[in-house]
Image (tube, rainbow, N blue to C red):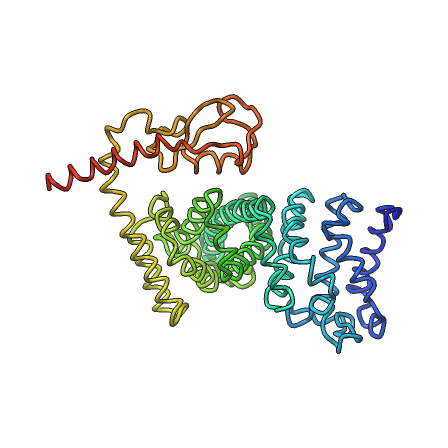
Length: 443
């Protein structure tokens, strides 16, 4: 393998993909076990250096999805079932029966999910949708559970992956929510013969061209949004993985992203999203809302997550209560999941009230208690050793997700370098308790 040129890997992927698309029936009866094992091995971290080209690595992921993912998992029926299964393992899928796959494929796919960012704006969505479907299949397989648990041992890699999917969801969902109302507007125009005929031919051509462009974007972006929601849902059923999303680096970003999606799905402008034939755009708002609320319910007992939701600019009491009522009315959540989502809404409201009462206390806070970057009252002050500045831990950890430098002097900085400002934090806690005590006495 160490002497194999990359063009061989490219030819290998092209031949397999061509066969699966053009002559799938001819693949029946052929043993593709070595092809599967080669794909898995080349994607593994031990062999990642052999194939450095991101487009080639993405092709290897596509091969695993298009050829070796069982039909029941991806609604594909052209490739014979015998191709996906190992006859030496009792006809079990290669994805679950192969030992190397069990040990390395889950972390390899999480790494690949981030790498395909470099494959181009239009290609990455397709690659990531396929990777998410593969991950879901592996997640449901007991053979891969140990590998998923080991993922949490590499904090840096997991944070990179988690930050990537939040960034992706923010970008893609914002684009979709901007285009769906425009699609609805044009659909209403076209449905009114008099209004449509009143426009000039040039105006109709311009509107139609823009409309078709919006449709193409939505059809391309929504499958990825749907897969991200489902991936967040099944990943957060595991406590160790859920705890990773609750780290300082991710907690606020996750809460803001989820609330932003919730705002669009149940907010006051929901009618703007009611396009004709939504299924043709892969737009299934009830299913997306269900996936979203399942994610929320998994964090019902996480106090810090509740505080982040309450602190978010997207949060309102009406938003959460409307979401709870909608889930009940449509039967999207039942049993324990519904109870947990309702409980979360109550806890977030309580946290919001507590924060509102504390906001008044912060008004006359000493300058040393304020984040030197954001000018807000700090919760967990830390010292940046490269500049000596003091900021809130959440401020700097979120900054370092996308920029590994000190924001004050641009010197190299990592999360491991920051130093807790222990004495200042103790001083702040004493000051805050005294302010609360004084407020309680006066009331």
